[in-house]
Structures are given as structure tokens and as C-alpha cells.
Amino acid sequence: MHTIVVSANTSWYLYNFRKNTIIALLKAGFKVIAIAPNDNYSKKLISIGAQFIHINIDQGGTNPLLDIKTFFDFYKIYNKSSIDLVLNFTPKNNVYSTLAAKFSNVKVINNIAGLGVLFINESLTSRIAKLLYKFSQRKADKVFFQNEDDRNLFINNNFVNLKNTERLPGSGVDLSRFILTPPKNDGVVRFLLVARMLYDKGILHYVESARLLKRQYGSKVEFRLLGFLDVNNPSAVSNTEMQSWVAEGIINYLGVSDQVEVEIAEIDCMVLPSFYREGVPKSLLEAAAMGKPIVTTDNIGCRETVDHAVNGFLCDVRSTESLTKSLDMMINLSHEERLTMGKASRAKVEREFDEKIVINKYLSVIESMLKRELK
Image 1 (cartoon, rainbow, N blue to C red):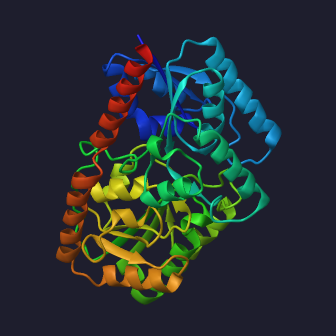
Image 2 (cartoon, one colour):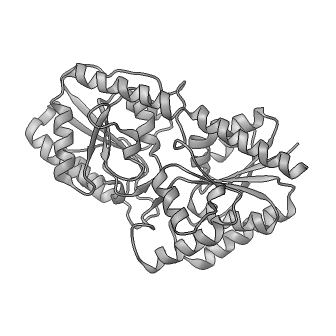
Image 3 (cartoon, rainbow, N blue to C red):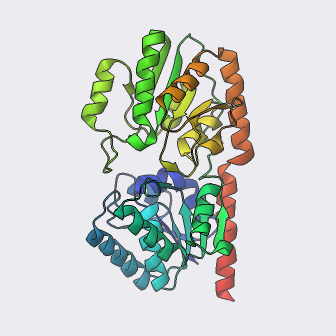
């Protein structure tokens, strides 16, 4: 039996974003080991049939000593275990797990799910990150990208071997879990932004738009936020800041949820005014699958989810004015017009972003690699 590792910077990520991939690998007869920091979701990974190994990863940190330790921890695991192939997700895993695996003569498949702020800024940290990507990704056997912009960036900068690259439709969406769910027609237009609460995700633009539109429409509009707050990231929204918005009456903060579909079901429109360098945002795909119109930025990764004026609106990056205009247009559509947009969202997801496409591609590439290795 071949052994496959799935690796990410949180067990939460693996369970919430890659659970069905893990289940598919197990059904295909592979032994699966999940490697991530231990959290409340580690036991859930074990419950679906994966083995679990804890590793320390400083997610948002830039301490090189901690990152070197992470590399050696990966190396110890790969060097002493009989592992055939590693699937890496999230940035530091794509770098340090890749290097450790290749030093241990283990096959590697990486997934570049967006590049965050590192490829926007020109800081010393950014330059070091780019060097690490270039050194590590050229050693990977396959690198999947979630959008063509990221793929072209890596190819043009010689970060990857062209023949080893391929595009996937994001991480896909489970169409059996996220089903078409029209909102109630009670005269209130409800917006939701689902993400880690980072300013890079456009949180402040969303809040400023909410403030303007609440002033204009009052109780006829509602603005909700859902996602991890006060995370280990220099762009994180603080608990104090969030509470001030809630107290002002412009934002409803919903915390976090394992059943995001329950929250999405209640809304009229999903919003993500991100200027972060996204892959293809999972929240937008899940909302689209449930038949929700989308308002997002004409930004790398985000624009892939919207056919402008068909299933939503694209607004300018870093522009509260443009976002407010798009949200105002959504408010002034009739309930039936928003439902029509939502149906177009569902159709687009079924056509382009079904999770089965992603899982089948992984299985196909894995089987091909292991057969070549066995010859």
C-alpha cells in the first residue's frame, strides 16, 4: 500500500478544505498521513481515517530559526517513514515540506493557493520569500495553480519548470453540501464577508461601505462578517476594532462556524473586496454554489468567480467608492433579479468549479507518478 502525506499549516485547513480529497485517497486504497499543527480538528482528521502527525509551523511569522526547525522536523518525518508522495498546501508547507521531501527522495505535489501580500510588497521578507519559492518549487514534481496569473508569474520568473505546472479550478466546492438555497424576501438585503479578518481582505473597505449604506438605507440592509479574528498576522483586525464596529451598529460579527452553509443560506449576496493575492477564494465558490450573487474585486483570483453583471459585480481594488457603488446596485435590484444572478452563480460553479474535477485530477496525477516510480 502506498503512503500519501497531506500537509498544511493547520489541521483546520485540512479538514475544512481537503477532507473530501483525503476521503477519496483512502477509498482509492492509499494510506494517508495528515501533517499539521495539532488543533481541535486533528482528531476529526483521524476520525475520517487519516493518521496524524503534529508539526510546529509559525504561520504568519518571519523568524528564520523557527522556519529552519520546521524544515528539520519535516525532514525527520520523511527520512524515517516509508512515504511515497507528499501533497502540500499553504505557503510554508509548499517551501519547507517540499525541500525536506526532496532531500528524502519523496515525490512532491504542491498547490499554490494564492500568494498573499508577499508578492505585492517589495520588503526584505518578500524578497527572501521569493527566493525560497524559486529554490523549492523547481524541485517539486508537480505544481498546481489556482489561477493563470500566479502560474504565469512563476513561469516568467523561472520559479517552476513549465512542464511540471498545471491549473486547477481553485480547491473546488462540494456541490452536494452547498446546494441552491434562495434567501427569504422580507425587504432586507443581507451581505456577508467570509474570510480571516485581515485588512488585506478588504475588511475596512467593507466596513466603510456598510457605514455609508446603513446611513442611506437603515434597517433595510445588513452587513455580516464571519471568520477568524485577531489571528497571527500583521494585517489582522483586532478584537477591539471589531467590537467598535459592532457597537456602532454597522456590522454583525458572527464569529466562526463549521457550518458556513447555514450562514450563507440566509444572505442575499456574498462580498469579498480583497486586495490580497488570492488563489480562488473558497468563500466565493461556496456562496456561488448556494445560488448567491457575488460582489468582489477585479483582482487576481477573485475575478475568476464573477461574470460581471451576470452573476455579480466586479469593483475596483482598494476603492471604497467602487465597492459602495457595486453594493448599492445590488441593493437596488429586485429580489427576483438577485435570484436570477444567484442561479447564474450556481451554473458557473457546476460548470467550472466542481470539487470532483480537483479530486479526480489529484488522483490521476498521483497514480501516474507512482506508476512511473514503480517501473
